[in-house]
Amino acid sequence: MAVSSGEGKATPDRHVASRRAGEQGLLFDTQVSAPPEDVGYRGPTACAAAGITYRQLDYWARTKLVEPSVRAAHGSGSQRLYSFRDILVLKVVKRLLDTGVSLQQIRTAVTHLRDRGVQDLAQITLMSDGVSVYECTSADEVVDLLQGGQGVFGIALGRVWQEVEGSLAELPGERAATDPPGHPHDELANRRRARRTG
Image (cartoon, rainbow, N blue to C red; front, side, top):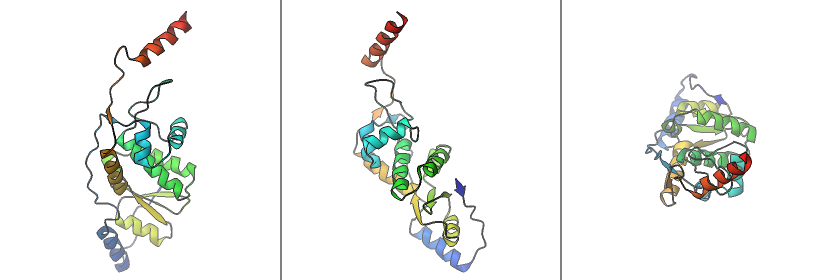
C-alpha cells in the first residue's frame, strides 16, 4: 500500500488547503471511544452496521478478506462473531468496492489496516485514485496527494468509526464467551468424533 510522507515543500496554498481540510473535520482529529473488546456481533448485525449483504459477508469470510476475529464458525449451526474493528473494516471494504477499487488493492489495504492499532485507525484517511490506495495521517499528506493528482476520493476512518458506533448502539451484540459445556454444538462435534474414531 502506498503511503505519502507529507514532507513536500510548504507553500502558502498548501497551508491554506491543509488548514481548510482540518477545519472541515475532514480527517484527523476525530475523537472516538474505545470499542468493547469482549463483545461480538453476529453476521446479520455486522451486515446491517456495515451496509453489506449476508452473501458478501460470507464470501469475504470464506476468502479470508475479512474474517471474524471474535469467533469463527466451526461447523454447521455455529455463529461467527465479528468485532467492532471487523465491522469497521467491512464498511471500508464496501466503500472501496463501491468506488471501483480492485479487490487486489482492497486486500492490500485490509492487510495494512490489520497491522494498525485500533485507536490508530480513527486517525487514518484512505485516499485513492481508483487504482491505488494511500494511507494519510495528516492533512498535509492529503494535500500532497491531491496536488500530485493521486487522490480522487477519501475515506476518513474516524467518520466511519462514528457511523459504525452509531449503528451498533441500536443493534444486538453478545459477550464473546466460548460455548459452555453441554452446549449442542459441542455435543454434535463429540458425536462426529466418536463416529470417526469408532
